[in-house]
Amino acid sequence: MQGGINFQSQGWVFGIETDFQGADISDKSASTVLNFLPGLNATVTSENRVRWFTTVRPRIGFIWDRTTLLYATGGAAWGSIEHGFLFTETSASRLRIPRPQSSSAMRLAAASSISSRPT
Image (cartoon, rainbow, N blue to C red; front, side, top):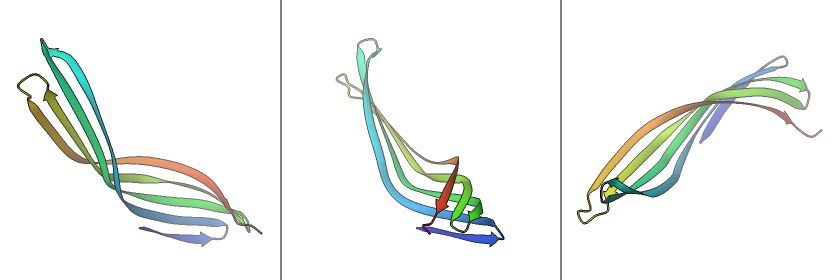
């Protein structure tokens, strides 16, 4: 889902855009730690998943001629991030310690561009 609005005052353009994305982005990795305690080995498994993210970006631009818009934009992006860690001791006892977590993260970004339409 995406939305936005722009206003023009003489050669200047001002606007704001926002969007929301559903996602199923994930990654999983595992590593074995040898002798983490004398005679014991362990496997650590990590899994990360992004369920959704959204952005909000203001924009300012200048109409260079009738067909070209020079503009800059920047804003914030944030989303739902799930982290999972599983620690498995690989000797006969098979100790398993899950560590699920869920959080949100926010980052800032900026960009500039030139848009032109054919004449």
